[in-house]
Each structure stands twice: as C-alpha cells, then as structure tokens.
Image (cartoon, rainbow, N blue to C red; front, side):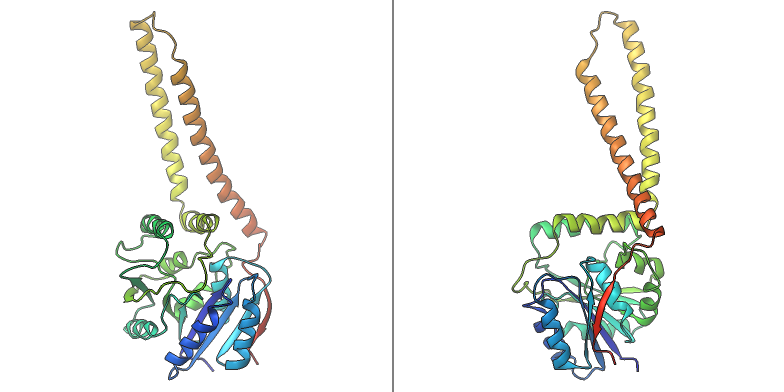
Amino acid sequence: MNKELSVVIPVYNGEQTVGLVVEDILKTLDDVLLEIVLVNDGSPDGSGRVCEELVVKHAPRVKYVELSRNFTEHNAVMAGLLHTSGDYVVEMDDDCQNPAPEVRLMLDEIRKGFDVVYSYYEKKRHHFLRNLGSWFNDRVATIMLKKPRDLYLSSFKVMNRFIVNEMVRCANPYPYIDGLIFQITTRISKVKVEHKEREHKRSNYTVSKLVGLWLNMFINFSILPLRLATYAGFAMAACGLGLGVFSVVERILKPDLPTGFASLIVSILLIGGIQCFLLGMLGEYLGRLFLSVNRKPQFVVRRKLGWD
C-alpha cells in the first residue's frame, strides 16, 4: 500500500546524526502515513550499523538501502527514490540542519498543485567557501537549466509521485537531481524554512566533490558549453586575423621595429591554454558518453532491510 509521504535520506559519515534526524521526523510527523528510506552511500564510519538499528526499532516505517560503495549523494538519492512508494517524497540531509517540522510547510505548498517545492533559507549555516560555491553554482544553473533567478536549489525539497516516477527512469551514471527536475516540469514553488547549525560533523563535500557535482550540471543537461567552444574558436580566429593584419601594417610602417619575444610567448601560452581547456571539455563529453554507452552503473544495491 502506498504511503502518503516518503523521506529519502542519503547517509554518509552520519553515525552521530542520522538517528537524531529519524527520531525527529517520526516524532514530528507521527500523524502522517510515512516511510523513511535511509541510503548508506558507502559510508566508512558506523552509519550502516546505526541505520540497521533504526530499522529494527521503527519497522516498518524505517527502511534501509546499502550501496556497494560510495556513488556520491545524487546517485544515492536516485537509489532512494527508486525504493519509495509515497504520494510525496521529501529529500533531506543526515546532518540535522533541516528541521522536520518544516516538512509540513512544504507539504501544504505542494498540495496546491505544484510538482516540486524547494526550501530556501533566510540565513544559510554553511561555511563561507561552501556558500560561495553554492552562489556560483546557482548563477550557472540559471543559465544552463533556465532556472528562475529567485529560486534556490536546495537539497531539502519535496516532490510528487509524478516527478519521482519520471526521474527514476533516468539511467545516467552522472545524475543531477535538479537538472532532471527542470527537464520535466516548470510547476515549481518555494517555501522559507529554518536552517540549523550542523551538529557533530563537518560537511562531506570536498572541493573535488563540488567540482564533480558542478560538472554534472554543466555538461549533462546542455550543449551550451560546446556552442561556447565554437564561439571561442571564431573569436580566436578573428583576433589572430586582426593581429596578423596589424603586424604586417606595423612592419611596413616601422621596418626597424624589433620582433616582440614577450608578446609571442604570451600569445602562445594564451592560445595553448584555451585549446587545452576546450579539448578537456570535449574529452569530458566523450568520456561520459563512453561510460554511459558501456552502462556504467548509476548505483549498486548490496542489500535492503525493512521490506517484506
């Protein structure tokens, strides 16, 4: 039987916090027919043990999916979505920064006929560098995904069953949840919620993970980077032609002018750097296409608990 609400929580190094999150949800939403799907994304700490204890303690409302290794957060969320049955699905983090009572506000909003409701914060309790990265990602998403400028892409959001069913059809090994949402619907709203300080642990997002997530959005959902590469090529060719004409004219007018070694080196380094960047971007596209064609797994489930 379908539940009214499913809550998907990707778990990574959440040994000290995931239990608090689950207890808060069950206590706050005790009048809602719900299920909580915990997805262990190859966490190296004792998160798996804690999740198993939560399943035993709160069965059948809490369920557990263990992935065979770390596939990154968005892949783990996709695994969780595949195992949900609720009419509405909430995505939450495992770090206690998203208070469970705010879920009711989001449910009230999505019942007005929206497909997705994002949360946004009056004040974000992240590190300065994390906030700076989020700001940059938000600006790029506005261009790449045609996202409304006033919409913040929070990981704390609620989706209806229609959106979830469409999203789980995606087999891309590099999923980007928000990109999939904007490819499916424009019926999107937002609700202001509280953002608490992180408890007990640091953010799991390293610089390399943030760059990887940004590349998923930048490359997987638009050919705009390839078009920009074409424009850059035309611009470089035009500059080269202009500089060539200028050099010929200057040589005619000033035959004794010495050859500029510094300008030559700068030109070579500039053009060479741009070419390497463009080749790297093209290689990223081809590499992802190669891995997708060869069916690189989006995630691999080692085992599940809580299902009959």
